[in-house]
Image 1 (cartoon, rainbow, N blue to C red):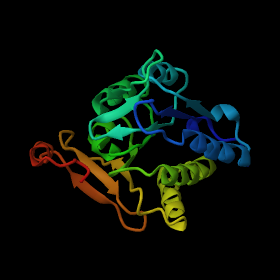
Image 2 (cartoon, rainbow, N blue to C red):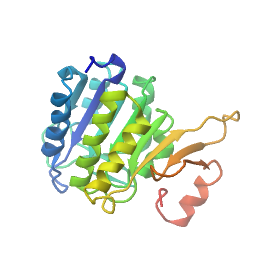
Image 3 (cartoon, one colour):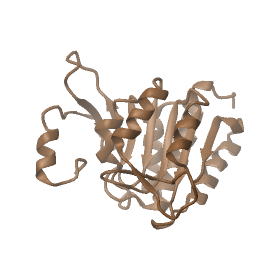
Length: 232
């Protein structure tokens, strides 16, 4: 195939601190590497950082004008677990707002952000401000299912560059491998509106159905009072 354009540069951050259950990050690394080799892509197109800390996030983002950034690791409704800069058994929880602040400052041209971690859909309102497309997981994220999804996603992304088509390919892979019940990826797109004060999301809850336009401008305060996760 023709050499991919520079506008498909990808940064993948892996994090699995010792104080949380171990993830098969090695298997995901291999699955993506298989895609890179099969498509005969330049090795430098995908930059992967293991045991990623907050400092790694900042430094790596400055190296290239990345089109897509992916985080694979543990998450909670409150944020994402990264490694500490010095060897330790304890990870650090970075809030979605802090992640968004970093991405907004360093990667203003980011096309998409993918957070393959549990409960990451709760971070969508913050992350959608920094990229037109945000891929997250509603509820818990099964490790093996996440690997199936990202492998099929990157196969599509590096072939044609379309985020939406690549997302559908990832969802189809889950269906083929009977894993759609153990992980629920959601693709959100920042919807355009003349009133900049409104918070609109164009959400693709199922690839086989039309997208939904959701106005969350006035709902965020009420969601907090309900005591449930925002993605629910």
